[in-house]
Image (cartoon, rainbow, N blue to C red; front, side, top):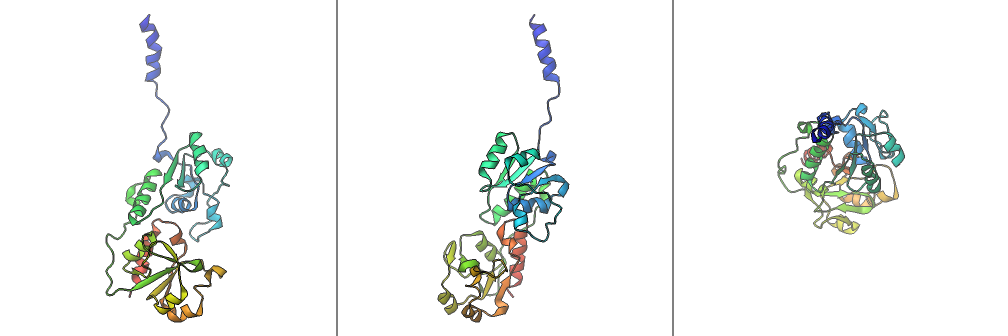
Length: 259
């Protein structure tokens, strides 16, 4: 009698189970925030992407074309896309990603990098999550560039805010061979008179190019007189907005300006 009862169970266990989803099978990927939009578009072809967030349309960059689909950020639309993988930064879409997880969707959360080692780890984390070889990761410079003399660089943002030490931006400047003009930590409101009295060797204008009230500090005549026009450096603003493979390009560009 026991053998009769066990036989159907043994036959059931012998049947192949449902295929388990893993990173290599993720062919319908959805991003929930701008930084992951850029990582997806940088590494993946459009046919593997179900949708990017609306943020990449609000903050367009020239290397992301119109061929990328997008979602409206609603649970209903994203679930209807039936993604194999949802990627999101640690501070974005908290409630939305919890609901997607509750519905059985695979959600990969990426901590925001705080230093350059975190940037390297972030890139490897992404490649593994989407099933790409980690050999595709960027090759960051192993050590800081050594300048022939100390040159102080002020990273100036909108509204007269400067970027001090203890930040990812500071580590980028130092890895490139510059010395941060600001001695304090974090983001600081600048005093125009102090900057003019003791000007930096160069200013990196890290803000949107369009004219706005937020740019008045940078456009002040006294500051323009204190630091010559050729010592005002500019980079693509978007490279500072989100960490990624392009972070290493910033280091190389900043190093070139030392001489």
